Image (cartoon, rainbow over the protein chains, first blue to last red):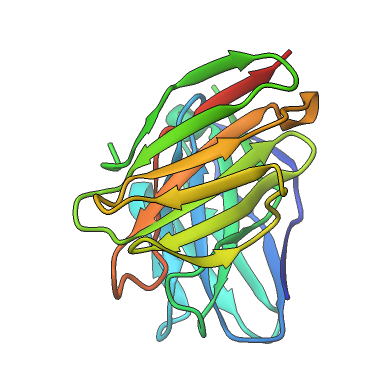
Length: 115
Length: 113
């Protein structure tokens, strides 16, 4: 079984400051890792994904994440946030053995960017 | 725009009733997934279909059922509705060899009164 823990439910930050949203996961099998963003009253949009290879992955909107296998973490970072980054962010895993399978999500982190 | 469409956008109904939510996947995608998003349970996987066949089941109640039709659209049927079924229901789709990358629709917000 897999589980995902997002360590912060809410992260307030000022505009142009750096931000890190933390994600730890637990799984007995190898997984793919994802970050999705949900803007108010919208569906989820993929920010970035880790499948294999380089542990630092870059996504859309200037976000990046680092996969750390030993710590089973996949933290999301952005060096300078904008007001428009205000949204809910979800970390998710999916078992590799079942390509095209279900996503297991964390509880979400609400990022609030203040002017 | 992800290319995944869901109808209706909002649905208000009463306890005990039955509703059907509809999803059209992105053109060419064979897999359809249903997820439920609620305040207390978060985002939970319900069920997956691949090219008309059920592929995986998650935390889907027996009162809920789904199917995928030959044109690949999918319907989620919710019956004997309870107040606790009020939630946002998302559909997602993915293609073959897409490494589990799923594209989400805008969701259907269900309110059970």
